[in-house]
Image (cartoon, rainbow, N blue to C red; front, side, top):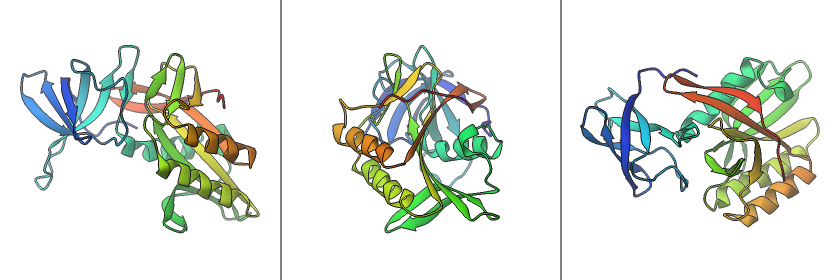
Length: 234
């Protein structure tokens, strides 16, 4: 995925009320950017970190700027969680995800259980096989490990319950896809110190047939590309 426009470099001054980030652009201009990430962004919100923002020309937007990347010293990190589905779909349709080959159709945001939508639905019309893919954006790094979640997530646990119910149906696959939007991690593991309930639910889902995938990304101011699979340690 290439960014539609050139990103603007700056320095993070503070993140506040979760959805706002004060940034000093390289030009010296002080701006408030939308922070499109509901997590804690642990390790990525220290004042003084380098960042990149995009700028919208939509006059109806309250905030023209959006926080896109944070320089975590060992890697640029994509913090825009809304881009994760696009990145995953792009990689799947390009045939870059070996575990998800053979599906002729990919749809996004399809309702599949009560009050839930699946991020990606992969379908093979010839065989009626379906694969339900839930995508999670991962930004947290602890030592060599990419970790999820970075805050307690009851919603994430519900998504796992939905996948467990799906995989019990005939001719259905269910996949939890962790998209690590950074390139300095050696493996993926659940963040049990942050949300042990989620970690336990994840292990239970794996035991019941939900497949787990984790992929790293190459991140630059020009774009983000899904690159290679990461080992998963449960």
